[in-house]
Image (tube, rainbow, N blue to C red; front, top):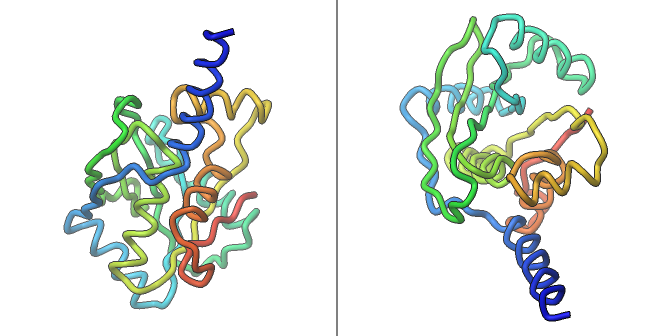
Length: 185
């Protein structure tokens, strides 16, 4: 019974911690800053969340096309990809360094972190604070069983990225008008 109690407390604690911002700081390099400021000058910052795969032109082209089609992003609208490359998920607090790169003609923000949803939320809030524009982020639903995806998130920090990112944003920014918008298709 004691062991079960410890396990329950550990799981509840892990869930609560997973919904808190973990970034102690977020720094955008010169290129990343130029990307977001250029879009802010047009009045809208649209971010496409991308799980890094092979880095091919095809990967970015298909993801861009899918998000524009399924999320109804106008063809002429500017978008920026945001990718979180996995690191040690046991680090509770992190200093995030966001780098801007151009991949096959697409603008991409890259960052290393052990917790994808928390990192996405922290970067979105930083973009809002720097530009004064509340950004929108676009996701595709995670494939697979939602329960196993949530378990995967609790254990590794990956899995149910879109809803957890939205919940971290909701917990971190109470003012709906200042909260980055999460779109899932």
